Length: 160
Image 1 (cartoon, rainbow, N blue to C red):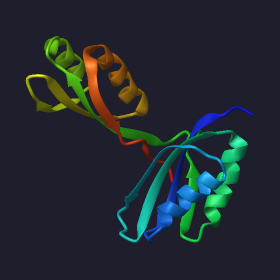
Image 2: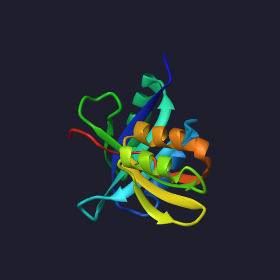
Image 3: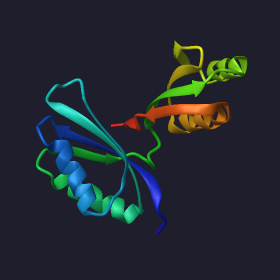
């Protein structure tokens, strides 16, 4: 079986230690987490964890069953291969802007990103969108001299 990127949505009770238990389960099963984002929902007692990792279909199915057994888990949905889901990331990026400011501003416009800070030496940009769009902007800005960047990792909503 082929190793692929998977996105899993885990609905959990908002209790102390839930994220640690989820991360511990993944670690004990030999999974390397690409990203994990936990956030409150419209119900303050419920959290959604969006988990991105690599694995085979078979290993992901086993993991979903094990996640469902955790005491605070309400629901586990693997959305990677579903037809109706949305995944978004957020990016903050600082790029050198001593030269080629016009070209950088044109890229920012094309990607519908925003400049959130400007100095004599750099621009700070933010962008929200699908992971592929985030990566494309990073790749295109690389030749201009990216000083640093941070990505949130994916957050997702499924059809359920």
